[in-house]
Image 1 (cartoon, one colour):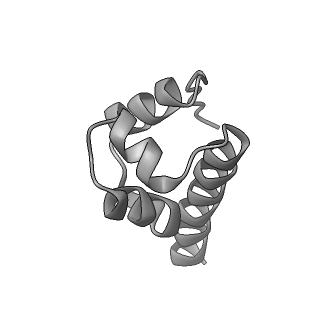
Image 2 (image 1 turned 60 degrees about the vertical axis):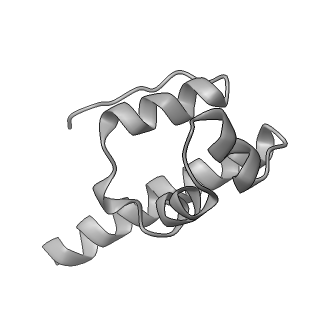
Length: 73
């Protein structure tokens, strides 16, 4: 069950990233340009978000005009 929960959290983060990008009206390529990375990196984040650095999430959030909030439960 632990493996499922970890995989689901990664999927959930990827979905949130994709939704925020789309809400901002940006393509993957446009977002990549804003954070100085490649479109393939954005695609990987949205598809397999289980191992993203917080600093990367912060850069993405900033590029999308969002604040990053992290909570421990």
